[in-house]
Length: 268
Image 1: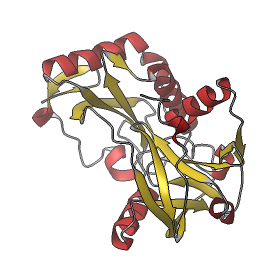
Image 2 (image 1 turned 180 degrees about the vertical axis):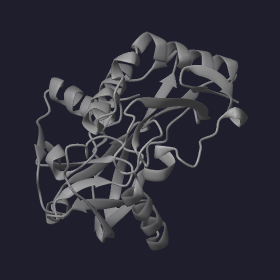
Image 3 (image 1 turned 120 degrees about the vertical axis):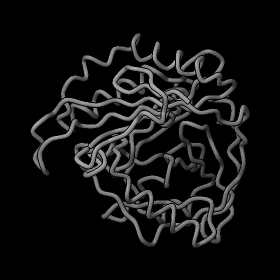
Image 4 (image 1 turned 135 degrees about the vertical axis):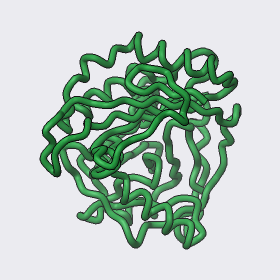
C-alpha cells in the first residue's frame, strides 16, 4: 500500500516517525477525513479551507504550499496505484515538524495522505444514544478544527462501548449540548432544525456546514444555538451527521423519537 509523505509517494512500510516527532509526542497537528466517490472528492474545497484555517490557528506555517491541484493529484494517484475502487476514505494528517519541547522551534509542517476502501453504500439507520457521563468539551480558538489530540473522543468512545450505546452526546463545561463522539448533532422541534453553535466547542463539521447550507436553501429554518441538554429530550426528532452521511436517533436515554427522513437524500 502506497502513502504520500510530504508529497512523495512511498510504500507504507517505509514511513516512520522518530521519537522526537511532535505529532507523536504532543499531538501537535490536524487531520481531515474525506470521501472520494464517483471520481470526485466530496466537499474538497471545504476540507482544504478548514485544514488551512486550522494550521493558521495552531501557528503551523506553510499552508500556502498545500495547493488544491497538487493535493488532488496526490489523492487520485494513490487511489489508482493502490487499485482502490468504490467509496474511498482519504485521510490527510498535517503536523508540526520536530524541534523544541512545548515551545516548538520549527513551525513548518509534515503531511501524510492515506487511502482505504469503505463500503459502497452507507446504511441509513436509527441508533440509540445517551449523554456522556465522563467527557465534556470547551470552546477554544481551535476547538472547531479536527486536531490530532483527540483524547476526549477516545475516552467517549470507550464509554459508549462500555455502556452499550451506538453514540454519546457530549456537552461542554457549561452543560450545553455540543456534539457526538464522531459527528455533529441536529434536532427538530416544531419544523425548525437546531444544531449547536461553534461557540459550544463542537467541531465545525464539513457535513454540518453543507447540511445547514442545503437545508436553508430548500426553505427549512436552521438555527445554531447554545442549549442545555434537557432541550434534546423535548425535541421531535434527532439526527447526527459526519463525513459518512446522516444517521437518525431512535432513542436518547429512555425517550423514543420520530425519524426526520427529509434529510436522507441530502448527501446521497
